[in-house]
Length: 149
Image 1: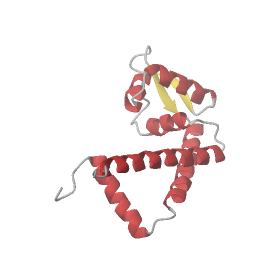
Image 2: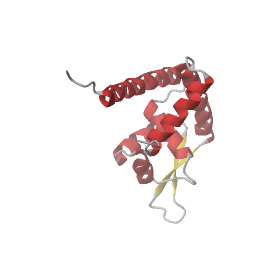
Image 3: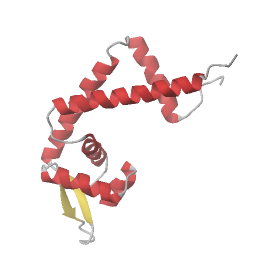
C-alpha cells in the first residue's frame, strides 16, 4: 500500500486556487472597464510603491521581468495617460516613469476591483476561517515553520 502524497495534494490545491484567483481578478478587472491588462495593473501597483519615479530598470527588477517587457507595458500605459516618462533631474540621459493623475484614478479603480474579487473569493468563509487563512498564508509567505514542526 502506498502512502498518500499530502504535500503534492496541497501543492495542487494551491495551484488551482492561484488559477481561480487570477481568473476572478481578471474578470473583475474586465468588468471595471479600465482598458488595462493584468500585467499593466501590476506595473501600476508596483510604481505606486516607489518613493519617487523609478527608472525602467528599477521597475524591471522589482517586477522580476526583462527590461523590454517593462518598455512594452509603459508604452501602453503612457498611451492611455496613466504614466509619463520624465527626465531624471540629476542625469537627463536617464528616463524615469511617473504616475499621472489618470494613473492614480486607475489605481483607485483597480483597488476597488481587487476588493470586489476578494469579497467574491472569501464569501464562503466565516470570519474565524478568514482569520485562520490569513495566519496560514502569513506563515507560508514568511517561510517560517509552525511551532512543533
